[in-house]
Image (cartoon, rainbow, N blue to C red; front, side, top):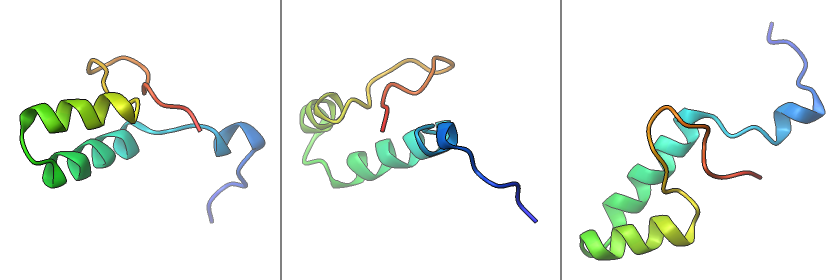
Length: 56
């Protein structure tokens, strides 16, 4: 049985969530420039190994 989530867990964005969001944007972008603009607008641009760039 999973442990009960705390209030801090609600605001945590995992690396997997960020990756899935980036992939969804990339699949739906018109071209590379559109993809980069969308990722930037959504706060999803960051370097691997850094904390996720977005917060809830």
